[in-house]
Every structure is written in structure tokens, then in C-alpha cells.
Length: 74
Image 1 (cartoon, one colour):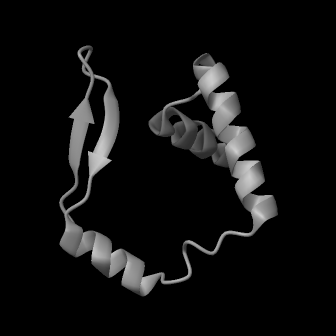
Image 2 (cartoon, one colour):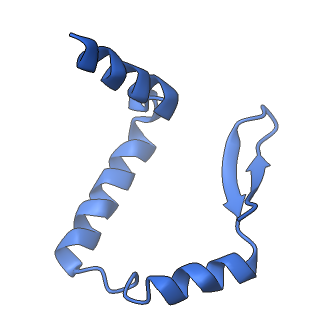
């Protein structure tokens, strides 16, 4: 898979483009991916809303993984 990233004027990633061939392969492999229970969709929506309201709370994945690795060393 070769995703293409979209960036804003400041160079921050804002989107990902996945070739249709890869998308079709993913949706075929995970055909039930759209069958999210209502309670789970509500939880996801609440978390996304929180992220939109509090973007300063986000931690880059690299920092999160580094923190996990540091916890393992203790």
C-alpha cells in the first residue's frame, strides 16, 4: 500500500489518500467493518468531539510509544 498524505499550509498532515485498489482489498478483507454497534459509534463520536475541542491534549504517536518503552524499562 502506498498512501499519499495531504498537508496544510503549515506542513501539518491533514489527510490520507489510499488508492482504490488498496481500499477495495481492505473492505473485502474486513467486510463487516461498517457494522459498528450504535453504542460504539456514540463512544467514537464523543472521543472525536473531545479531540476537536482539545487538540492540545494530543500526543504524537512517536512520543507515546517512547513513553511506553520507558515504562517497560522500569
